[in-house]
Amino acid sequence: MDNKIDIDALDKKMQENGWKFLGPILDYKKALKEQASVYKKDEKYVVSGIDKTGESELFETISKKEAEKRVKESISKIRKHMLNIK
Image 1 (spheres, rainbow, N blue to C red):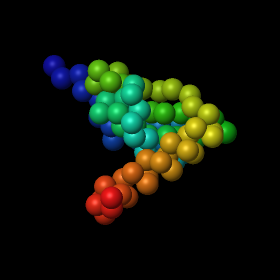
Image 2: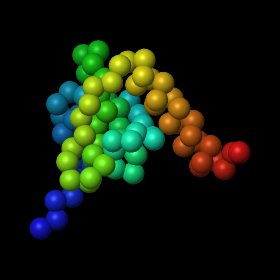
Image 3: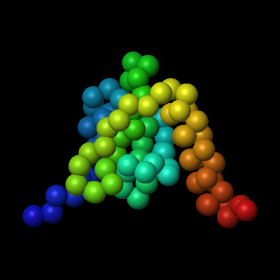
C-alpha cells in the first residue's frame, strides 16, 4: 500500500478549515523537496506540506514577518527560474 500524501487533498483540507493560501515557500529544510506552502488564519501563519520523509504532513507555525519574507523570496526565485534571469 502506498502511503504517499496527496498535496492537492492537503491544500483542499487546509482551505476547508479556513486557512488562506499565501504562497509557496522554497528551501524549507523540513519539507519534501524543500517545498511547502504558507497559509494564514486569524493572524496565525503556518507552513504546510509534506515532511521530508514524504510520509507525514508538515504543519508548523511561522511568524508573520518570516512568512511574508519567505514567500516574497520564493516568488522572486520562481520568477527568475521561469524567465531564466541571471
